[in-house]
Length: 78
Image 1 (tube, rainbow, N blue to C red):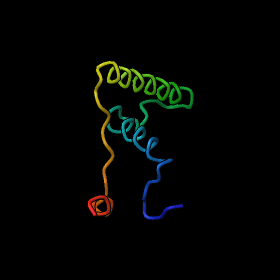
Image 2: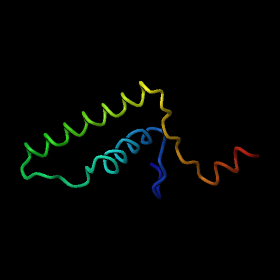
Image 3: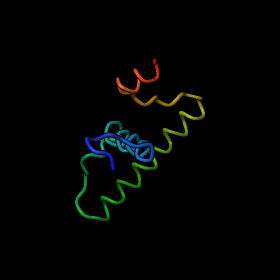
């Protein structure tokens, strides 16, 4: 398991999804009290994320590229 916060190829997609949920849909805090209402908010947020992604796919909008570290940039240039 990598240390220091380095992401592996298996965790990169979920990290992007969580980042999108927090940044664009405000999923860091829940608006409601209670497990049932919180679950409903998460389900509706996931549905909204899917609609945004389908819209981007239909408009052929490219996905954001992953950031490349300085070391990886140096290794690919050499």
